[in-house]
View: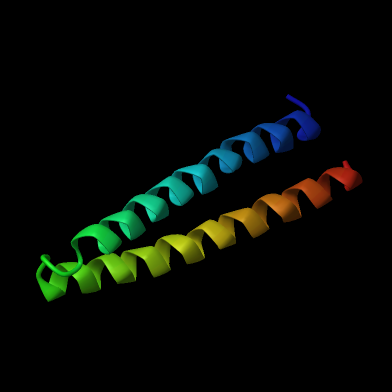
Length: 75
């Protein structure tokens, strides 16, 4: 497999994960909006931490994909 094909496959694989993270974020925020008042404070805090961590991870993966796409010019 050529380096170009390998890089394209890696990009295609990595592009899947931001979508998963966005769906997870939307679900957690929806749960927070609808159930935050009835849920225990520890669960709400855990959900807020999860939203922050998942959002940061999504941005990190997005930036990595952008860097890999830019590196395709060199191949």
